[in-house]
Each structure stands twice: as structure tokens, then as C-alpha cells.
Length: 219
Image 1: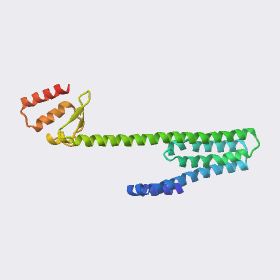
Image 2 (image 1 turned 180 degrees about the vertical axis):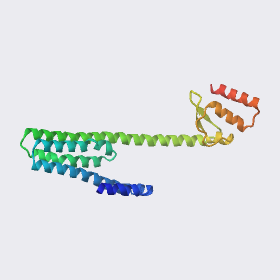
Image 3 (image 1 turned 90 degrees about the horizontal axis):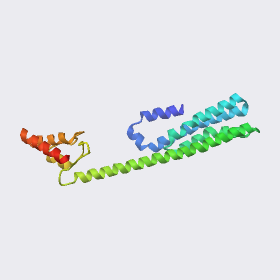
Image 4 (image 1 turned 120 degrees about the vertical axis):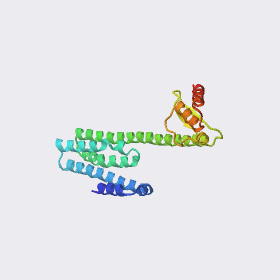
């Protein structure tokens, strides 16, 4: 009920509210996520304390592992949430198994311990990938912004085409000089030459000669 309440409140909040109160929303989410896993873990451990049989043990292990399985992939962006959740769902049952003087239950406790360690390791690995991707994306965006700024501050017009003749870059000076639209879109060298010729109000024969000369230079 608490998690549904937080979900509905977050859904109804404005985008500005979500951004300004991101830390608060994260804490509410973490509280609900860890609390839910703790409830599952304590329930499974309580059942095992009261009844040590195959069915109860199977129920506890399956539920705990089922809950733990998707934690790393879902919350790797915030590792401490995953650590809290995996501890809450597995540790109570692990303790319950340790109270049994049986090699079989000790083996199950060891498996749960390995699951906890593995989930932590996987979460850390995924978090490093996410952080690296975010940093690389930000750096790429900064480089793109710098490149665009440099192009737009040139005193002369410039365009660049790829090996297939598709125009991939045009600067502001070129667009202003030939009265081209700011958002040209996906065009090739011929289309750009025809747009430039049209802006110069060339006669048909002069336009064809200009386009042919342009394409010769591009080739």
C-alpha cells in the first residue's frame, strides 16, 4: 500500500516537482523498496522458524531468490538501495537456516550468502557501466556543442558531406548567406547545390552548370 501511494503521488507530481525533489522521491522509493523486501524476508524466516520442512524451506528460498534476482538490473543506478533490499530479503532467512543443526540448512545459508555477494558484485559492475555511459554521453554532448559553436562562428560558409554525398554539417554562415532554412534536414550534395542555385535566382542553364560543377568538386 505504501509503495502504491508513493507511485501515485509521483505520477501526479509535476515534472518540475520531480526534478526539484528528486532526492526526496528517491528516499521514499528506497524506503518502500527495502521495507517490502524486509517484509518478504521476515515472513519467510518466520515460517521457517515455526515449521522446518521441505515445503516451507522451498517456499522461503524460491521467494527470496525470486525477489533478489531482478534487484541489480532494476536499481543499479543507486547501489545502496540494492544492498539494502538484498540484505533485507535474504539475511533473515539465512539466520533462520543457521539455527538448524543440519548440513543441508547450512548449505542453503551458504547459497543465500553467495547470492547476496553476487548481487552486490553485479550491482557494482552495472553501476560502473551506467556511470561511464553517462560521463561519455555528457562529454560527447560537450564536444558536439563546442564543435557547433566553432562552426557557427566562422566568417565563411562551410558544409561537410560523407562518402555517399549526404550533407552532415552546415554552419550558420552558409545558411544565412544563401538564405537556407535553419533546419535543412537530411539532404545530399545535389539537393544542397540546387537550393543554393535557387536562392541565387540562376537561369536554368546556369543552375545546371552550377550543380554539375558543385558535384564535380564534391566527388
